[in-house]
Picture (cartoon, rainbow, N blue to C red):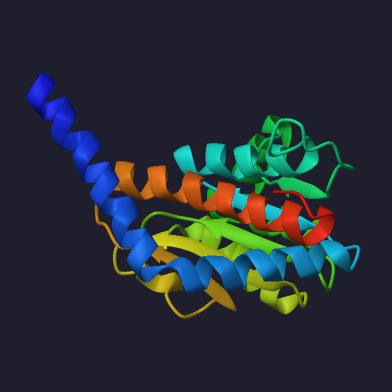
Length: 193
């Protein structure tokens, strides 16, 4: 078992090294775009399924509360869609699960806002529908993907694709990338390291 655990850790490190080699420019561009959105008084919406939903909530919380201990600053407007079980169950029951995020984008999204869709496969129907809704409403769209990028590859205004086909490695990298976005935002808006 120990050898298996060591291999998983090494694979996670290798994946992050690939992110470092292949994704840094995309991460930086997205971080600046998110910073610009917030500087202009707009908000960031996040969505994803399962572990990616947790990542969406995690990143939103870092922006609302704070990212780094000791960096005292004002709360930043970020919303993790899909965290209200009443909205989720009502929408899934009355319309369909594929509408759970797009209905919330319709309700909360405004021109100038950003929607970040997180999907390891790039094929989640509800994230795809949310991205379409966001584009129709004039939001900037960003996707955090993995593998070959799936259906969302090259569809959003900005994207970062983790070069791995293993869901766990993609998710581990997505949360690291989300933390990098937060770091860029705190530096850009507040001059914090």
